[in-house]
Structure formats: C-alpha cells, structure tokens
Image 1 (cartoon, rainbow, N blue to C red):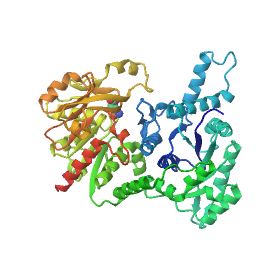
Image 2: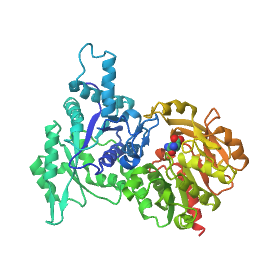
Image 3: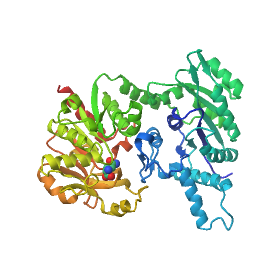
Image 4: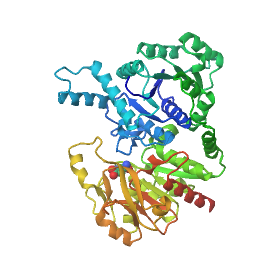
Length: 547
Ligand code: GLN
C-alpha cells in the first residue's frame, strides 16, 4: 500500500447548502488541536475549470489562493479554520480532471490505448488528491469534501473514485444529511436520509458517520431509529441543529465527542490535549457575540438589495475579517449592506450618516460606480474612516482626482475608455487577454510583494516594510497621474518592489483613509485578524465614540 494519509471523505445527502464545508473544516480544526497534521481539499463537480468566471451573486465570493487560484468560497473557510495556505490544487473540478486526462492523451501518455471515463477519470481524481497529499508533506489526515449531494449524476465519477480509494487506503465517509421536521404532524422525517444512505451505498461508500443537520436538535430516540434502519452505529450519529453562527460549529462538534469516535475508528489516539486552544476559541466566540459596544460598518457595493445570507456569501471573507477584527478589540461589528446604486447627492446623510466606517470592496464593471464615488467623497470630507479594497481603492483615486485635483470626468478605462483622465488604466499585459477573450485565470492573480513607505499608515499597521498580499485585478492606478495626485495630498504608501505599480494609497490628513490594490480579506484568521482590518475597526470605533 503506498504511503497515504488517513482519509476522511465528507459528502452530503438530501440537500446541499447545509454546512458541509463548515463541518469539514471544523473537523480539521479539531484534528489539528489534537496534535495531528491535517490538510483539506474540495471537489466541485462542475465543468467550469474554477470559480473565476462565476458571478458572486450566484456562487458566492471567488476566493483567491496564494498561487493565484480562483476558487469556491469554502476554500476560504478551510484557510481560516486551519490557518494554512492552500493552493489551486486543493480545488478539484470536473473541468480540471477532464482537461488533465485529455492533455495526457494528446501527449500520447496512454501508450496507444484509448483514454476512457473508466478507469482514467477516477484514476486522475486519485492522482490529483495525492498531489494535495504531497504538497502537504503527507499529513496524518486528509479531509476531502465532495460538493453537491450523493446521487447527483455529476458526482458519480467522484463517488466512484472515492469508493475505490476507500478500498485501498484507510478512509472513512461522513455523510452530512438533513432531517426535515414536519410541523403539521409534529414529526421528524427520516425517509430522505434513508434514500441518501442508499445512494451512498450504491456508490460503494459506507456511511461510517452521520451528521444530522436540522432546524432544531434531533432527539435521541429519532437518531436511534435512523441507526436501526440504516445500520449506522448510534454513537456515530451526531445531531447538529442550526446554531447562532457557523463559528459555533467547532465547539458543538467538540462537545459531541465525534472526534474521539473518528480516532477510535482509525485506531488512533489524541496526541495533544486541545483544552487550552478550545478555551481560547471560546473566548473569541464570547467576544464576538457578547461585546456590548457596537461599531457600524457600511459595505458600499454594486449589487441591489440582497438577503443577508446572499450578501454574506458575496463578501464572505470581508465579513469575516471585519468580525475577527471586532472580536479582537471587544466590539461587535454590524455590517450594513449599502447598495451603491441607491446613493444620490441628496440622500448621503440618510444612508451613510449613522455609520462609523465605510468600506468599498472589490468589484467589476460600471454598475454602482458613481454611488461608490459619492460614498468615498462623503467619507473623505467628513473624516469617516474609509477602507477601499481593489476596486474600492481605484474608486477612491478617481474621487480624489475629480474632486480634489479638478480632473473632471476622471475615470477608470474599465468604465470609460475615452476619459480625459484615465487615472486607473488597464495593465499593459492584460490588453491582449481581453481582446482575445482569454478571461479564465488570466488576471494579475495571487501573491505579490509590496514595499511600504517608512512612516506611512500602512507601515504602522503592518509593523513591517515588506508585505505579501493576494491580488485579483486587470487594472491599476495609472503611474502617469501619481505625481499630480500626490501634489494634492494623496500618498502612495505601497509599491511593487520594482517601484512601478502603486499598491496602497492613503490620505495622511484624514483620521483613517486607506485603499489597497490587493485583497487583505483572504488572509484574516479568527484569532489573528488582518492588521488593516484591525486598524479600520479601531478607527471606526473612535469615530463612533465622538458622537
Ligand atoms: N475591476 C477592477 C480590476 O480589474 C478591480 C478588481 C477587483 O476589485 N477585484 O482591476
């Protein structure tokens, strides 16, 4: 048997969207606290190569890895919970698997045989999983989350691959299922779960553990019934009702003692007492939810009114980063969605007047741009703490050019190709890519270094002169306008190491005004918030107190 970690396959039954990703990463977190090395990866059964070309309102945030992967937002939860940095390889899609097989065939690596769905596709899935194993130096455990639900046609090939692997290596399968409660008859219903289990067995995977999600806690007698009907040991079934937030899942799973049973199953014992770390995490929860002081942050973005779950998904890493910073400072951060398209010169006081801080996040295209610029002007003129991320930083530059430097009609060429003042312009290497519609995975993506100016706000926040952050953009501040902008008080405080690309701007005579070309939200962790978010919440808190 080749050297392999112990595999934990996390699959879903009945419906998707019930927190498989949170459960998978929480289990990883608990394994880590028990002294094991652990890695985690996700299979998304769609044909799209990655999430890069997907609309965030339909699929949630596009998460960016250090090596420039554009991926499903679950991968961001993995990084936050396990405090490690993933790579592209940690997100396997049908598109990538087939492309690899086709490329291999074109290189004649099937030795004159024809490439076939079976066995070449599942073999490639296994090979790709072992790439992740290798990249993580053969960890004790590898958690593999399979997106969607068991029995989906598009999942069949992955189930086949996992079933094959579970015969060859030490592996367990955890089925995250959903138990409906019918209030009209006052009963929990087990039939959909039975069907999911059947589908799983049919695929050759055994439901070693069940996590029974539901609106409320599922009574023991009912879990007993599932155990008897589905031949799953009763103490391998855990009820996981809707909780106050996804942050509570690790603690709920810790209390369920599921980890001990998982370890027993592998004949493993805990290597470390997780007590101190759990205590630390509980304090984080306490501070997150029980702090009395409130800081209100307006997230000004282009989409129209969304429900709060959808809004959180679109900006999930920004939300988390704000909350983590608040938790560290002992304040409760309330994030308010402000649709930029609703903002006019007349209603700024009504829409923004009560906010302690304004954040304009990343974005693309013309929609909402003028509203964002109005919000930034409001923040600049009224000394409201402002934080612009990527497009938000570009908008802040446009606002400053128009309203302080008198460059009427200044814009980004993303919105107006004919502007007289293209203060934000396309990066030269991007021009051909756009012309050829070569959109997938071609932005300036992933980690780049920046050098910070001594004595700047950025340098103070980071406590260092050299930083590495993740990028995702095609446009950038136009170097030809920097001198003029700087002469009026805008400061470029971070640049690419060659000195060419402006990466951070700030306004030194404002209490807190910073814009960054990169995405710091991807690097925040629950207990280690990102320094710019921390500074932003701190400044917003001070602003709140002045009222
Ligand atoms: N649309 C802008 C660009 O491509 C900003 C991208 C972003 O906010 N991620 O440069």
